[in-house]
Structures are given as C-alpha cells and as structure tokens.
Amino acid sequence: MRLVTWNVNSVSARLPRLLAWLRVTGPDVVCLQETKCPDAAFLRAEVAELGYAAAVHGDGRWNGVAVLSRMGSSDIAVGFPGIPSIPDAEQPPEARAIAATCSGVRVMSVYVPNGRSPEDPHFAYKLRWLTALRSAIEPEAAAERPFVLAGDFNVAPTDADVWDPAAFVGSTHVTPAERGAVRALLDAGLHDVPARALKYDTPFTYWDYRAGAFHQNLGMRIDLVLANAAAYADITDAYVDREARKGRSPSDHAPVVVDLGRSSTVELSR
Image 1 (tube, rainbow, N blue to C red):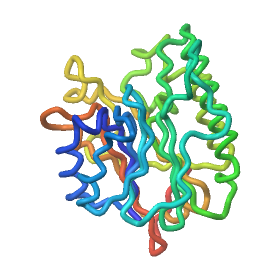
Image 2: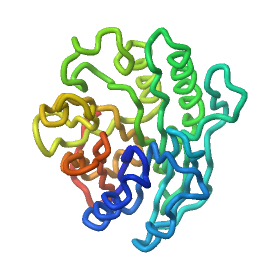
Image 3: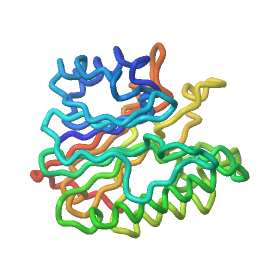
Image 4: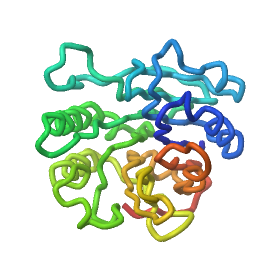
C-alpha cells in the first residue's frame, strides 16, 4: 500500500495539480486536509476517473478532510468521540477528522487547529482538540490491526523540525504544550514515521507563501504520519515530495508518501 497525506489548501483550486500528481505517484490511499469544500461539492467524479472512492467531511469553510482510496473503504467515521467545538461558537465541531478502513488498515486523516497565538482562546481549543484525539485513538494505537494517523498537525515536534528555532519564539506550533500533546500521541503507542527529504537535509513539509520561504527552504515539518506498531513494522519507505510544492499555484504544503509492504527489510528508528 502506498499512503499519502497532503494539505492541499483547497481541493478545487488544486484539482489539476492533484490529479496530475496522483497519476504519476500512484498512491492507494490519500489523506487530504484543508479541502475547503462542502461534502456535496467534493469532486468525486474527477477522482473516481482515477479509481478513487472519496470519503469526505467538509463544510465549505477553511477546514475539511478526506480519505481517497482505490482499495475500497469501510467503517467511515467523521470526527471522533469528545471532539471539541471552537471557542464561543454554537455550532457543530469543525470538519477536521475522518477515518476509514482501507484493505485492512485503519486510516485517519486529521487537520489539527492552528491555535493562532498562545494568548488566543483558539490555542486552548487546539490543546483540547489534541487531548481528545489522544483519547479517541488509544484503542487503535494498541490494536493488532494496522493504524495510521496522518495529516497536518500544525505542530513541529522538535527544534530540528523548523528552519530556525529563534524565529518561532513566542509563536504557536513549537510550544512545549503543543509538542507535549503530540508526544502524548506517541506515548499512546504511535510512532512518528521518519520521511526522507528529496532535497536538503530536513524533510520540511510546509513553507510560507511569503518572502520566498520555499526557495530559501525556510520551512517546517508539521505534516506527520503516525503509525501503530503493526503499521510501523510494515513500512518500507517514506519521503516528502518537495517537487509537488513547486510550480504555479501550489499548496503551501508538500505531500508525505509512505510505502507499506511486508516484503520490506528496511528498519526505521523511532
């Protein structure tokens, strides 16, 4: 199985690029984030032409997630138990999580809230969201069935995952609380899959659109693939496709590609 996670920053705006990339790369399962598309408007016919069935969860605002599969999908679930709503809002929880079982592998695509700033109420919301996520995935993390939690976590797990730690002092994505919340997911039984960088030394997955950040490689690793023991033992390769961030009108994120197959002899360290 070839599994991908990619924050496309609007599936409709990125559709030609997405379809072209799918044809070349040939993933079996694709976790998308920030689709910015209501369920009824998701471009199912376009991805179906490439053999993908789409499980989607979106309300048309700035969030939205999906799992595309050409291996079949079942037990589709949107959200998760205990998922919080945004602060001071009388509305359902945001569309930020969806799960499906694809050829025996349980896959969950997540788009973790940004947090805005450490002083903003949305920062506390982000931490509550991650805490609830940990509780929700605990059974899958401990299960014998392969489980992969993938998406845009809006957290750089360590200082090595940002281009310059000093540039992020006082900002979200790097605070001890956020990193602790991601560490709690690992403590529940998940492994952070180490992806290769195809260029430079660090497998950054996000570069701001502004100030030439991409061309200067001023990036962050915030798109993660976390796998339980059963899935982790089956991984043969993983890489960040930085090339997909190039060209006209790209997403500000690059896809992370993970190959699973029991013929592998490759060992990946935690």
